[in-house]
Length: 483
Image 1 (cartoon, rainbow, N blue to C red):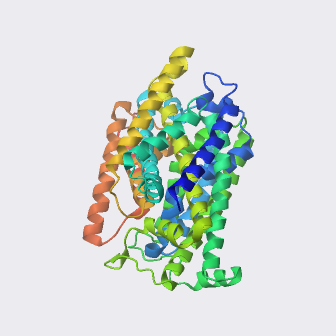
Image 2: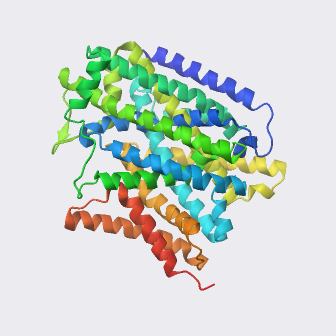
Image 3: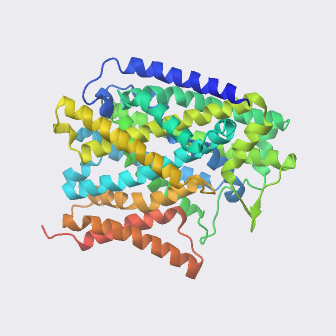
């Protein structure tokens, strides 16, 4: 694909986002950037959240990792369904009843100010790394497909993407994002369908033959019952529940859109509808994963292996699409990367700005001019942090989606422990010791996983988040008060 064609696609795509931003920004208030005036249609939010939930990481990591982990990720998907039910019927009504903007305000209401800021800080660390790693993979794809041909350094590519996101979200924030994400979700779903059809046609299969080939493929193993394996069914399912609750229900970037809906009933419908959409999309990604390996096998494309493990699985789908599937497939894929990048990163940047502004800058009590100044200052700082993290991880290898979930296990675990303690117990504790308990739980989780692998050949896998949350709850009981 010529760099000129890709440049035209990016300009056209961004122009559409700017038009939507202009319409959404015509009538804004002091808090519009953060709460969208609480007037978003629930079905629009549900559809738009697909784009936020499916980043470029999902687009390439889930299919690519099928070569090393079969379809075991489907076990995780099953667990996410139960997690979304908990979010819809437990967490969402609480947030709406309290009319929070930052969801971590719940911790202040339940426990106090130190716990509140501790929870928010863990989110800020988690989201900064998670968003930056998703952005990293998107930038690497764009760099490979476009900017390298123009001899543009990758740090310039990072800056360009961050500036583009800032341009269409700066004024009205989450209100614009609700609408732009809906459009980007439409593009993303279209890309998934086009990719599958393109590969099917390349393999000269009918839909029935394609389904049959996928079902009997050597990678089509869904359940792993080996208890020592990191992809064991129970580890994956329970982790699916807990990671969904943590990365969606306790994540400002995902819940902030839901909180722009006016009432609890519509907000619940939004979460349930979104959970159905995202489960279907992720299942299609797994099918796509088998298809790309089938194509590689039939066309003699060699895959680099080390000790039987396929290396750089995140690069397989982009390489095949950009070099083997023709111009339509390449254009569709790159539109999908752009859509998933903007849809996931814009929400994360808005959420980080919201959490820090409300939880640490006390923006609610400020004057109109102060609110504007603080928002702009925090937004600029968030973009700088994104840039620095992406630069630091630029040379990382492997499936980034697993790196994200590993980091989430250590950073969202204490947050999950705090919320579960607040929701299902009545205890109070010595608040000044809460940060110590949370950090100690994360460190001990890492040590336990390291030594369990070394001594017993037992990998916690995604269950890190369960161990971490459990240790946090135990440590909170150690510091509870009699009162």
